[in-house]
Image (cartoon, rainbow, N blue to C red; front, side, top):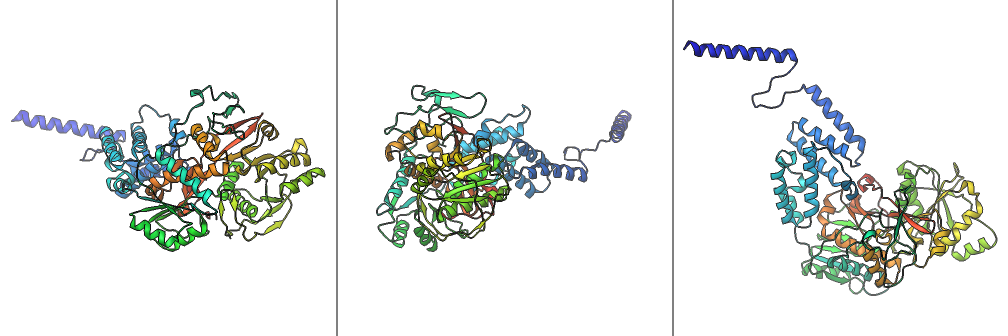
Length: 598
């Protein structure tokens, strides 16, 4: 009995001594649940704020540092709602990483939580087309990473109910003009849509087919260089754009299935009748219409069916069942403004066709330029090729002057399909002089016009003060050869990934179908991407961070569920074409901008 009391007293003394040592050392006592030592609330709040400052400073731009900040912040949060928000925000940041970003990630060996998150992202990317496979893969991931906070509470998007709703069978109706004047446009989109359903050809890397494609790499730059004569054996020879492959993101794989796609000709029946017929056929997603008047009518019918319309509306009201996808010329102008701003230019001049189409493009460029942080944009309008030839014959060059663009938000109404544009009300321009020397010129012209415009610019300025020159895809047409590429030395231009060589066999296939008509090839690419978007429609609707390496551009979602296309930039260099690596800008950062009329 005595020995037992002695043991208890001795044990108590030892515990008291240990407690005293801990107090002297500044340690805190674990709570009864065996949790980690408690920090003072002030210290916790300071740590949370420190990590939040890293997150806020990124302004939505994905990076490992931001993801690490979310991971470090998570165990400090006490509220269940705050935990779930942290998990959802971590997941959204991960899904914003482009495929190029993901492939270049390097993490430390002891970053088990981060590794788990990255594996969860891979699990999602590999299985997102099949809801059953995705749910099974997520369950397996939770077994492999039981300590990951997402294993305790999945991101909302990956919870079973959300996955199941994404997996609802899609029954698609294609609303296109397949007769009448717009038949050629509708047919190009239809072919792209159905070819994507059957599966795209596998992209070839330059090293995989050296007989057809010889490449040379400039050691001083990261640009890929492709020989001017390095072409795949297309059904119809392609002379204008030898594809620059290596820096162009590969077009993403498309969902392949055998579902029946209902096709309706919007030129042969009223939209009211077509909508009734589609509902009777059990359709739950309409892709189309294409022409803006048809889009306006269909939207006004207030159908509950989901719609991926192939044009944009001016000042469209948000509708939860409608997304907008178009080959918007305004999107291309915004691409140009971003690209030129990123190249540290300050005083741009935009050369556009005389008329309302040119005014519209100039206004979109100016709005984006000012949003990037720039100030005045000058606009100069140009006449036809015949007028330009008269000027050049008289020895008259193009002076780098113009009028300041009034970048107000009143958007005019128009219809643009491919290169076809219906005129509209003109916009106002305020005469002004340049606030500094023009250091960038963005040219919106045809191929024939560009061959005159560049020498006219060279004629009017000294070689020491030459600005950087940029051109829209409007000038990238079949038929230009080596002489043209040499004449355009140094000029940068943009176009869709399909034409830039992101999938050479697919480019070859499209060239054969449309006899190298790049306008129709762009619509064909639009049809391919419309198929991908239709099969991921619930994700497009719900995720502001959605993006896709498409055939018509790097696709992302902006306000009103309008799909934004970022194009590939290239440059003429010593008779060859170099690609300029993508710098992806998330369209969610464009919130608040007005959707352009297309």
